[in-house]
Length: 113
Length: 114
Image 1: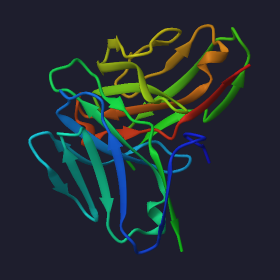
Image 2 (image 1 turned 30 degrees about the vertical axis):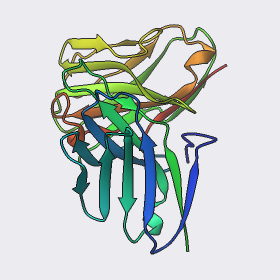
Image 3 (image 1 turned 90 degrees about the horizontal axis):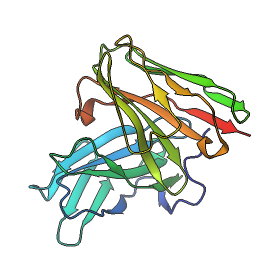
């Protein structure tokens, strides 16, 4: 499969445990954030988003936490499964700008059996 | 099946030899875009298109061209490829601009320019 980054930070988690993936964003004016999952050999896939007027948002087995004070975003995956093995990256956008998603470089999640 | 397809998936070429990477979506999406992904840099947008015959530059458009003659197709053209365009390229589409939760990405095209 395709590698998306040779030297990505890697998080190794045992199957069944919870995973926490972190992202520091750059623009204090950003007001919309997205987490993506990218499996080997595939394109990115939207997981969950959050607006800056929220601190927490939950999906199916995933939770995103937003700490605007320290410009930090985290993705929590409950009961991690082998199919969760992928690269995860965040993206930020400031509403009102022309296009302008800014993507992070990502963290590789490895799920061990 | 709803999908974005790209061709070719892998391409090795030489400097200066014009090439086109095709992108096609079957979801009648209005918005399409091209990204490149490089180690340590994250995805960067090259060009985007709001609809047929409407295209605009993204963050890194130099050395690339696009066209949007039909809604389903959004080819990426490298008129004179150079080694710094060696990268992994993704096409994406969504029903409208900024519908990120509905955005579909293609499987990627690995381009090597020698």
